[in-house]
Length: 185
Image (cartoon, rainbow, N blue to C red):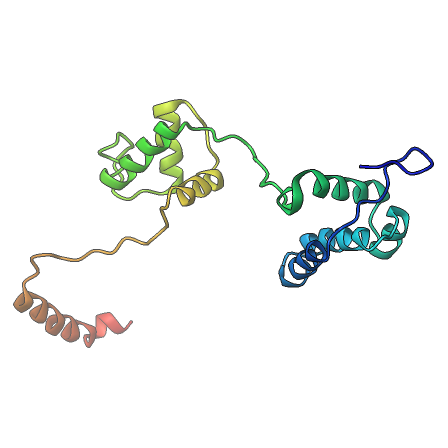
């Protein structure tokens, strides 16, 4: 890039195609941060100084410089924010897989957790602590279970071999019992 008479880099000439691409991206994105970044780039392409762009967009001059330099070096892909890494997981992928398999296949009592038949986040926390020595809060366990594709459902019980005749007899007997004076008091 050529230098101007002050020794600074001269303003790069942008093509109409580059300007129309940025304009289109600015108008079509629904992300407000990206709209602002594209606006900064478009204003720069139209010859505005960083100070003037700062006045127009209410952004910091340094931020504007970062956006422009990033665009010059990496193009529009460089302006897309990176997903934050977040806190590392407490369990390894193998441990998470074992937890998922255990909860999917076994009841808590089969997995060595008391006399319970249904998993809760509290029981899953206890199993993880016993198995891996890692302590989770109940909310943290709920987040983990959700990430593993599990969701909470209330248990329902269906009698597989229910006798229809006995059920009918029970209903009739129950109706009679409900009408007795002892039941009403």
